[in-house]
Image (tube, rainbow, N blue to C red; front, side, top):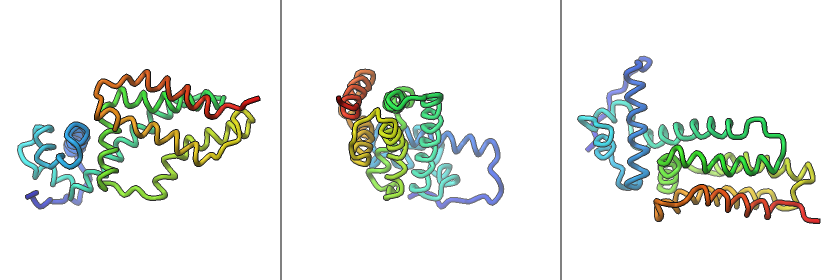
Length: 203
């Protein structure tokens, strides 16, 4: 049984902030490697080298609160990565390529991140609703809309295409779970080729 958390009312100290970050990182890695169902507080504490699960409960009132902290941490780092990947791009097709390569590039440098997020979402640890779905496909939808406005992309249903592209990318962590040696560079090249052909305007 998890210890009842003792909640502080004051602002967290630097030591407490570091401990939270340590727990979040351990939770992310545990979920990614063991699967969400097996990522108990005990397993997370073991990975974080904590003496007791009570140290987790001190910072997070529940598993769901920890899940949300993991998702937020991943999302913040993914956003920073993608902002850099997309910076200075002035052409829709270049943006499409950069989006695909950028997201897969994040999976290469953060191998546990999206696998952990996938596990949390799939097992209800994060409330994924219609608004979350709109947010997920919004960046790629904007790129596709831009390409059509510039008459560089063919006439297609943006929602269908955006959802297809995003789901192709979202499915990579699942593919990695069955094939840990998945070649992400090849995966990126194939998806770029696939969606270049799918979106380009034909004479």
